[in-house]
Amino acid sequence: MALHHTQFDTIVIGGGQAGPSLASKLDARGEKVAVFQEGPFGGTCLNDGCRPTKALRASAHAAHAARTAAPYGVHVDGVTVNVAEAVDRKDSIIGAWRDGATDYYENHETISYVTARARLTGKDGDNYLVTFGDKTVTAPRIILNPGARSVPPPIEGLDAVDFLDHHTLLDLKEAPGHLVVIGGSYIGLELGQVWSRFGSKVTILEHGEHIISREDTDVSDAIAAMLRDEGLDVRTGVTIDRVEADGGGAVVVLGDGERLSCDRILVAAGRIPNSDDLGLATVGVATDKRGYITTDEHFLTSAPGIFAVGDVNGRGAFTHTSYQDHEILADHLAGGDRTVAGRIPTYALFTDPPLGRVGMTEAQARAAGVNITVSNYEMASVTRAALDGITPGMIRLVVDADADRLVGAAIFGLHGDEVIQALSLLMHVDAPASALATWLPIHPTVAEFLPTIYGGLEPA
Ligand SMILES: Cc1cc2nc3c(=O)[nH]c(=O)nc-3n(C[C@H](O)[C@H](O)[C@H](O)COP(=O)(O)OP(=O)(O)OC[C@H]3O[C@@H](n4cnc5c(N)ncnc54)[C@H](O)[C@@H]3O)c2cc1C
Ligand SMILES: NC(=O)c1ccc[n+]([C@@H]2O[C@H](COP(=O)([O-])OP(=O)(O)OC[C@H]3O[C@@H](n4cnc5c(N)ncnc54)[C@H](O)[C@@H]3O)[C@@H](O)[C@H]2O)c1
Image 1 (tube, rainbow, N blue to C red):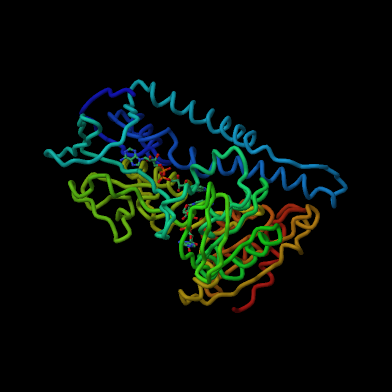
Image 2: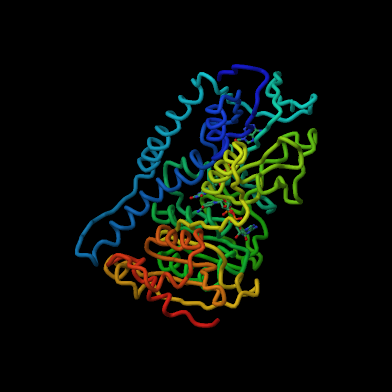
C-alpha cells in the first residue's frame, strides 16, 4: 500500500475490470489518482470468475477428450482426474498474473494503490470524502467499480449447510460424490459440466421452465440435451422446498416431496450489485430498484463528478463490458466523443461446446416488431464439426429484412464463442447482412457455413 497524497484528482473505489486501467490512463495524463481495492488485485474476473473457471474448464475438457477418444482410434485407459492438480494448475496461472499486476500497482511511484474497503462519507466544497479505516482522503472526481456478488436464494435451511459458491468451489481438492447445483444459468451450467467431467454426479435444479432463460427456448433446450447426453441430471421447472443438513452432506427437498441426497450444494442463482455499502446516500448517487447505479451514456451518476463502471451500472455483467466501460470513460474524460449508447450485447456461455451470442434472440426481435427473416442450421451438418466429432448444436441468424441488417445470432457448438465474433463485427460496423453472401471464409471451418446459412433465410 502506498498512499502518496490525501487530496487527489480522482479516486477509484473498487478494482474491477475498469478501475485500475482508468487509474493508469489518468495517471499518464498527470492526475493524482488513488485506487481502493478490497481483496486481491483483479476483482472477480481474475480471482473467482472468468479466468480460474476457464483454467479448470480446460482440465475438464482434457479429461472428456481422453474419455471419449476411442472413436478417433485413440485408446486411453483408466482416465482419472486429480482435482488438486487441476486446481494447482489454475492457481499457478492466475497467481502469476495477479502477482505481476499487484506488484506493479503496489509499487507504483505515482498511483496510490490501497488494499482496503472504502466508502463515500460526504462532500466538502467540490471534494468528495472517501473514508477507509480511520483515514479520509478527498477528490472532486470519483469512479465506482465495485462489481457484484452472488447471493443465495431464500431457501429454508440453506444457511444451515456448508454450501459452495463460485469462489469456494474453485478450491475444492476432490470432486464431491454428488453435487447439486441451484441455478441453471451461466455459472451453474459451466461449473456443473466441469465438475461432472471431474467425476461428480451433477444435478442441476433450475426453477424456470428453461435453463439459460434469456435465450430462445430451442437453443436452451439444445444445451440441456447436450448436458443430459453427457450424464448431467438437468431439471427445469423445479421448486426447492427446503434444504436439510445430513451429516457432512445435505438433503434437498423438492416441491413434489422428492428428497435428493447430496454431498455438496453449489449456489449459482444470481448476483446483485455491490452498491449497498458505498455510502451513496451521503453524496446523492441514485440507484434503481434492483440496486444498480443509474448512469448516463458516459457513466455519470446523479452526483456531479461521480461515475460508475462495470457490473454495478447494470449495463452489462461481463468483463468485456466493464473493460469497454473504462475505454469509453477514459475517452470521455479526455474530451472524446465515445458513449455506451448503441452497444451491441455479446457474450458466451462457456459450456463445452459453448454458446456464442450477439444482439437479439429471435423472440426478442419478434417482440420488438422487426420484420425478421431467420435461418437455422444444425451443427451436425457443418463439415468441421463432423471432422472434429463435435456435432451438438445449432447456428441461428436473425435478419431485419427491411434494413438488410443482422439483428442477432446464436452459435451453439464447436467454436461458437469465436465464430460469433465475425457476426458481432459485422453488426458493429453496420454492414449489410447480405455481405455474408459474397464473403470468402476459410475451409474447413465453422465460419465457412455462414454464407450458406445466410442463403437459407426465410420469413419467420
Ligand atoms: C464464476 C464466474 C464466471 C464468470 N465468467 C465470465 C466470463 O467467462 N466472461 C465474462 O465476460 N464475464 C464473466 N463473469 C463476469 C465477470 O467476472 C464480471 O462481469 C467482471 O468481473 C466485471 O466486474 P467489475 O469490473 O464490475 O468488478 P469486479 O471484477 O467484480 O471487481 C470489483 C472489485 O471491487 C471490490 N470492491 C467492492 N466494493 C468495494 C469497496 N467499497 N472498496 C474497495 N473495493 C471494493 C470487490 O472486492 C472486487 O474485488 C464471470 C463471473 C463469475 C462469478
Ligand atoms: N460466460 C460468462 O460470461 C459468465 C459466466 C458466469 C457468470 N457470468 C455473469 O454472472 C452473472 C450471474 O450468473 P448466475 O449464473 O449466477 O446468475 P443468472 O442470474 O444468470 O442465473 C441465475 C439462475 O438461477 C435460477 N434460480 C434463481 N433462484 C433459484 C431457485 N431458488 N431455485 C432454482 N433456480 C433458481 C434463475 O432462474 C436463473 O436461471 C451473469 O448474469 C453473468 O453476467 C458470466
